[in-house]
Image (cartoon, rainbow, N blue to C red; front, side, top):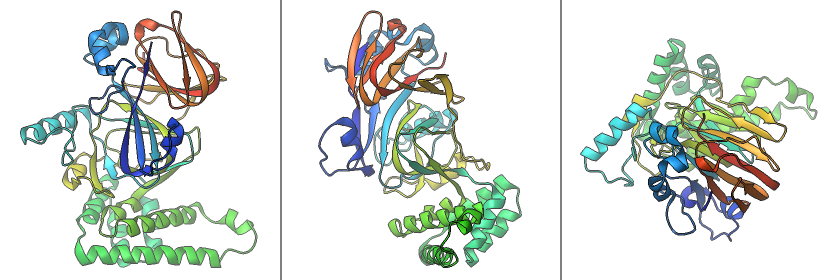
Length: 410
């Protein structure tokens, strides 16, 4: 068992307070966005002796990973855990399939684009399915909404360009129509785009004003308002706020077609390859295949590759992609999305019945705990982590606190 220290990353969308508070250091006023806890080459966790987790796994792959995991994943830790703190919207983005990642990585290598360069989309050869577990209220957009509902929401804007898109969506079929709509939205430029975003902001304010004027001083009308009207108001307000922040960005228009997802603390959502998404606010624990591949279409100062996103995005309408928890014990729940690389357990100490084999990463969400194996014990506080290797066997968590445990499904 090895204590490990994750690496933090600063991005413009990060929070100035959440990660510093989580990790116990004073805020320096910068936007701290992510804490990486894993063995990705971009920012591997470090052991107390200065070695990286990558070094440890390279020296003892079967001891730390187990023979089966080492064989299946080429001696690599196949998952990456993060603490993610979003104060502002992340980019409108999508992650590739494994096949597409290999092709994109090879293509950018052949073009001479350095790994880690800002004009690179494919940093490695892995796909990047991911799950986000909400510690605070967590909001985002994920997956294309049911087409009929999007048509109704667009028509509530009462704008000619929105009506045109709604009419095109109505002509179906759904996937092809959404591809056409997103292509048309992302192709908007110049005065046409500026006018559309200005009109969108005005329409959002008009809808909100109309809602307030028509609301009597009781809660009865609020309860009776249709879910469509409520959703439309949220979608319009969010798009209008994005239009103010990104006044020349056509990606704002695409958000009108996406599910608006709100996670309460303790809830999670899973994003598979191809699901267009953008987180907007909140603090959570993220676990994913160990990859940093992101293809962006807007809402960011980083590299945008609209053509690639249109190629790899999944335009199949889906409901909000919530990932249900499975109760393991009264103190432990598990999230097990349909991927080979990871599962996530959330436990309230004292807790056992935790994954018994393979590589495991324990990150303390809150409180003070002690991670105990048959041969070792490590005390941890909020924001601290430990790597539990395969040969460490069974372990338990004592004390008072909450932990997130990443593991490879058996």
